[in-house]
Length: 297
Image (cartoon, rainbow, N blue to C red; front, side, top):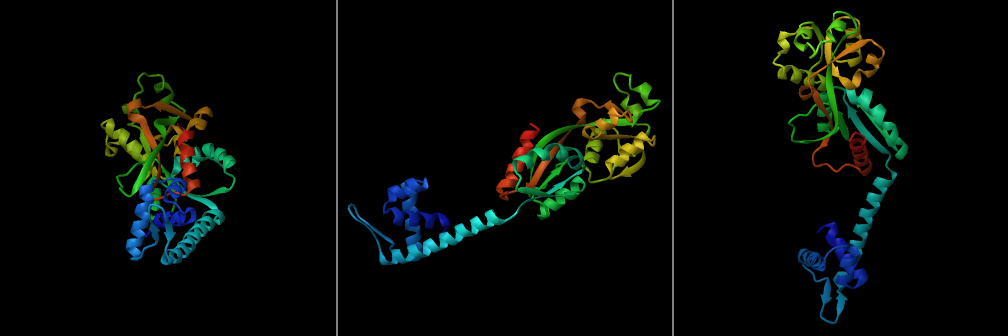
């Protein structure tokens, strides 16, 4: 037996009518009849006696009604207590760009609408977050790469672009006026790359592959897991890098860096909201997922 069958039976007894019970529960009368029949078969007892003129609950039917009422009350009390008294906490794992640039932009608006919800936020590279969501360490994750993991659902929510950045100095100042941008010449310079597991690093790798350039052909001067450090080293003249446009606007405004546009069809990247496939997200977690998707539509 299941809760739907118990609710159908309890409604039939309460309203003394299959028709009214069906209307109150918002299901069809044949469904009600099926639920009662399945209960009677499982219990090997007649619960209801119904003729063209009479409707009666059998003695075993009244006994079972009391049991059904108790079971349904326990279930309802559990759900009410669980959802009503539990603190509304969203365990959120985020990669570098969402942590530094997306959440500060989007989160204040959600918190104004949901003052009873709080966040536990952890930051790591995209692969770390994907692994942790798969293990159940976070309710949801925000990452900049997609894997073929069948146990996870990836929902695209933000479109970003990659850009090539250089120091705001010669010879790059002179090269910036060239059309199109001399990308292959620029990529002969020392390059600073993100570490493996980073969504930005994977996007840069994909861009280079589309350009027909192998990372082995580059003069890689450093690999780092901190995007701010990469920008500071580029600004200091250590080399160039390929980085998210979302991360560089303030540096461009301050005149610390130069940006070289990458071809549009090669530079796009997606950010994803991820969670375990088939899991039922708590209502306030689903509200946050929907809010974030709509914020960046």
